[in-house]
Amino acid sequence: MTGDQHSEPQASERIGARELSSLELLLTSGKSLCRGDLAERLGISEGQTGEVVERLLSAGLIREKDGAGLGGRTLVPGASDFVYARLLEIQQEQLAGQIQFQKSTTSIVRALSDRLHAGDDDHPQWKVLRGYEPISAALEGAAYRARRKVLSMHPGIPLSPEDLADSRPRNQRALDRGVAMRSIHLASMTRVPHGRSHLEALAESGVKVRVAQSLPFRLIVIDDAIAYTSINGTDGEPAALELRGPELVSMLREVFEFCWLDAQPVRTAESEPEGHLLSERGLAIVQLLSEGRTDSAMARSLGVSPRTFRRLIGQVMEQLGAESRFQAGIRAMELGLLGRWQPPDGEPRSR
Image (cartoon, rainbow, N blue to C red; front, side):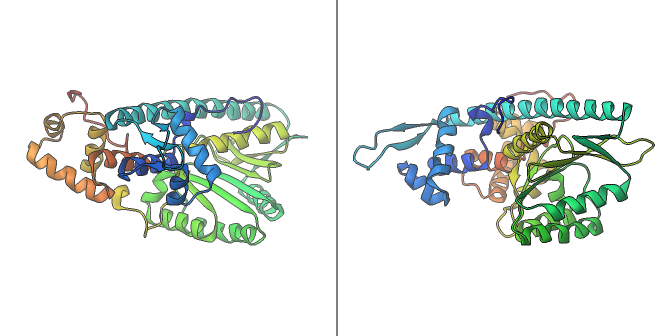
């Protein structure tokens, strides 16, 4: 996050996929690792490793100690039960912070939209676009003029296969000019075949793509100079807001960066385990494990015997590519699987 008027998230609010992968490596490596070892194994720079380590240290998930002849200070993870509990706490903090931030920014955009509907459509810093053709023409022109970077967020239901395919040549033209592109989509896109294919095609073309469980509104920011966001139209007519003021564009860029931190990279079909395809029962199991219930209590919740439940846990661990329940919890968190299952109404929250 940049800018002087918006507070930066605390370190514990920035625990993402890279931090979780680092923590998993420290927990499962079986030997002491220093920052250099971590950088080499994760394939990231020393600067990136330093940022990851500082976030983990600030969150209390690891500590550093003298290497005793190992040539540097070593990184030591906390006790497994503490780390697991702390990760769950951080996840709840991140979710609450994201919801509040999205509510605030959505309110700002809606208030601005209401002001515009009450006055003129044109202003030195903004312009209201009404109807499909003006919006499409403005986006085409802005994409053509892009020279450095394009940031975009796409909430709502996935578009049709034809509409998604039509957008790719425009993206490719920008990429061919050397424009850096980052895009955030709803995680539900990965569960729709043509949606997942679209995200994989974007990633293969050079767009950095992430998915999130929720997004506040549709947004496109071009070269930090111009932004487009959807607003409420009249009589069902689509409408968009074109913004050019540096303060407004900066605010919207920070909204994007905040959502980017909480989003997860899209995994290709070749690299991703079948965790995203867990059944409803599999989602229930990872959720119950995250709540710290006993095996007997979890088995009762699912209506199976403890022996059957242990077999089901083994199947879920295999799908997630995990060798332990703790590792399965981390993988479930990385894939955004926690929170997708809710117990039936009236079920006791026994442990």
